[in-house]
Amino acid sequence: MSDIPLDEAGARLVVDLGAVADNYRLLAGRAAGAECAAVVKADAYGLGLDAVVPALVAAGAHTFFVAHPFEARQVRAAAPEAVIYVLNGLAPGAAAALASAGARPVLGARDDIDEWAALCRARDQRLPAAIQVDTGMNRLGLAPDEARALAGDNRGALADFELALVMSHFVSSEVPGDPRNARQIAAFAAVREAFPAVPASLANSSGIFLPQKPFLDLVRPGYGLYGGNPTPDKANPMRPAVRLEARVVQVREVEAGASVGYNAQWTAKGRRRLAALSVGYADGFPRAAAGLDGRPGGHAMVAGARCPIVGRVSMDLLTIDVTDCPAVPQRGDMVALLGPDLGVDELAAAAGTIGYDILTRLGTRFARAHVGAAAGA
Ligand SMILES: *Cc1c(COP(=O)(O)O)cnc(C)c1O
Image 1: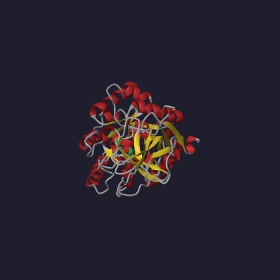
Image 2: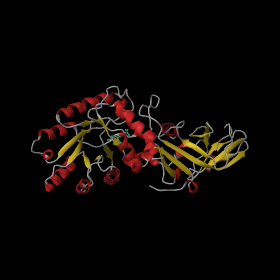
Image 3: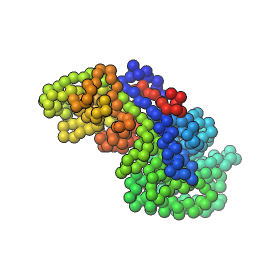
Image 4: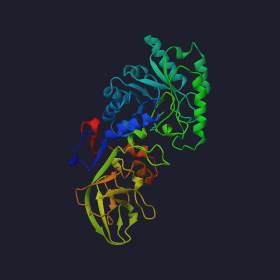
């Protein structure tokens, strides 16, 4: 991770590891009876895997999911005892490297399975792996019938490795009323019968809040750990874990009719006071959160007041309207763009995307700090 001093950066990203740990405990408590793993792919959703993984281990996490083998190596360095699953399966020829990192592939097709089995035979070792079953996503995984056939084939590939987990993934668990949830739960239960002794996993963050409580043996939250709302139709039960603050570069007053930013997409209706902040789309701040004439965008929090973004978001700058702010911000002040009162889900909604997209794009130009008990700060 980059180590940029605050006085050399335009913005600061503060990650609250205490909140991540609290979120882990809340999710683990809700799913009590099942093991609570942690999904830390994409640099722990942009929060910094190297810092997040030890905080999660301290909170009780033992099993981690990543997307790629190099991420498994990062987790291994941060958590020597962890069980690590690689969700994207086995790329051709990748089995040996993955095994040497002590990681377990999530096998989703016959070719993956055969390669892992071949490695196990060559090493004369029954290495652990998971199998993914597709119950509706049509993305990765064996069809339920294929999985059942595999389970019934005693001399097949499954005999060569240790099947440590059978898993599937929800299509719309954040929409509790979606009938697909119940259909996937039923389809997965039928698959599970073919693997009676194998631990099973279905729920992501939102799955942990479904009324059916589909916790099984292991739950796999990601987003909720990082403060995202797994229950979008209800108040967020999670603690916010990121604060993004950008420096005020200039404050200016403009007259009615003045436009702001590229292509003059926002026009002052009266005399307005504006502040330019040193953060932009090159920092991962969504360009789609621009505030345009006839289409409001995102906000910043200044002295407890919500100040709208006005005009297009530039590469390294954006402008907010601070006219109605109780305190006039000064050059050098830090202004919040994400934080306890301005969540990732809210910014995502303003930008027409999801909070996952906001978090995982958080850029590399910030002065980053990890705070909270586990950070020792
Ligand atoms: C990313 C991912 C998760 C975590 O999902 P969240 O919605 O972030 O909790 C769980 N399982 C699989 C297969 C994933 O790809």
